[in-house]
Length: 405
Ligand SMILES: Cc1cc2nc3c(=O)[nH]c(=O)nc-3n(C[C@H](O)[C@H](O)[C@H](O)COP(=O)(O)OP(=O)(O)OC[C@H]3O[C@@H](n4cnc5c(N)ncnc54)[C@H](O)[C@@H]3O)c2cc1C
Image (cartoon, rainbow, N blue to C red; front, side, top):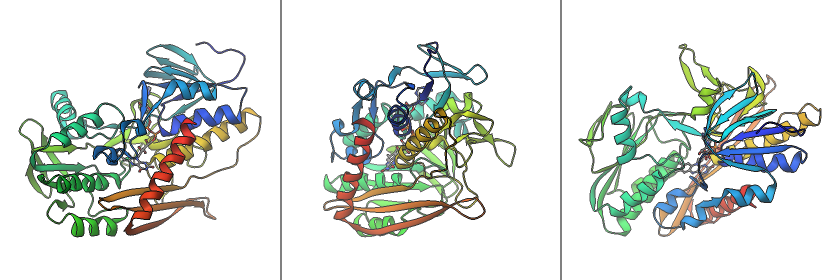
């Protein structure tokens, strides 16, 4: 796709960040051609998927069509994998061919770093991914996890939680609650063991701890500081710094990193030890690459933005806000103006009980202090209650509307 006369923005990734960027760009800069490149044929939402695992919502609630929404908003949807980025030529290579760009927005989400567990042993990584998927990226893993849960007859169900930063930190605890609730409701003699890399539950720790004790005392065992040392998907064993376990089924979450294309675009930074940080190095306020103003990275792939709290929460809420913000930045630049800084916020609801339906929540706000540093304030709402479930579904409805209507 060589460029025509119109300016062109190419967006990589039709997830929470990329979809929002494409829609808002068309609205704010209608003379701009927008091309969305996404490898999957349909959208599937990770948010709300823990409730879908236990049949609280239908698949149709999470799945959305890309072609219809792209037609509605007037951007081009290209179903393809983006393979390479040539920043000097301002061209990307996809499985469908090459596309020129004026601005590029990378919203690839995360990838699993199985190398941290298995080095170059692809057999171990593939066996882990196919037998005990994490279901933390949008593909067939969610279906596999749901099938495994619905076929589970009893025994030890183990979850390894990755070290921070990770996609949606509270969601593994929500998933543990939903699985435990499923066992309880269906009288399955199953036990959920959470092997957490962290030294405690964060965020909304008290809310989750109370739910574990009051609702799932006989179902959930929480193990902090369980740094994974060895995983064997064939013998179903995990060795950790806090002890070794055997499992009947497991949700094996390797550490998270920015998606492949961030690496291929040369966007990933270097940490204090001189090693790849795993996340994209961006201007904390403008979200463009430090070494290339015309390439933006948004959503989960973004690296450190503040010495105070380091990373934005890797959430759909933040990715959606980033999409709106970056679309406005690019629209301003296309109009020949300098954009002013806009910061996101974050809001997450986590369901902890299925009967009655109850949730807890956490909210984050951001501002720039007088030293020019982004500061975070966090409000945990640990009091589980039905009202937060209603708010959760209202939130999801508004976000789906924002991306798809
Ligand atoms: C179980 C679970 C529960 C969650 N609950 C919540 C919640 O309640 N609230 C909340 O705010 N967040 C939640 N999240 C987090 C949320 O899903 C992510 O933070 C959000 O999806 C990040 O958006 P993104 O655009 O950065 O990445 P994604 O939404 O993952 O989108 C990335 C897209 O890019 C595509 N892609 C990647 N590389 C390429 C390539 N090279 N070529 C073409 N396409 C590519 C992928 O296929 C994908 O569609 C949850 C996550 C999980 C796993």
